[in-house]
Length: 242
Image (cartoon, rainbow, N blue to C red):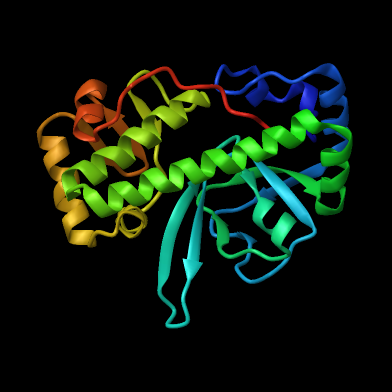
């Protein structure tokens, strides 16, 4: 059954800001259905347009860019609450691809109705603008990490971001979260070799700070992990949910 926006389990989480009753009513009309994607399914393709926009309701995915020589660069990770396709919605086509890493459920919206959202609900339009701004901030932080930190700090930063983000959306337990990506995906995103990434993860495990085994990340010492990553564990502001 399709989940109505008013009964969305994500909206009950503290990670996301509240919206008004009128906005919920509009969102129920804006949403056209749900897409179930199996691992490895390409949800959006680089260089192509799409008639739909998506919000990740359940599961996790990967954003990546493919070059002419066939090489792939991981540029981001998709988690519950993420809005997908805004780039194609305003620029006609995607500059990167999005692929399901696990089984995913995605809320679908008609791209053609995006203008109605901007015209009729300026507060939701502001939320979309804020989502784009938050992505810009995150990409700036990621670029700074890749360009300026050593491998130890890079990996610690990535694991800490995974841990706090996934806990915020109710995934995992007190000290663990699912992490269904490959080490190669993390290495690509951080500009490291697979061997260097593997050795760095081993050192974090030996120091009893964090352990990534299979599809599970366990953080034994969140404070130490954040310190290694040069991250201030301040209160996280609520994010918009479309």
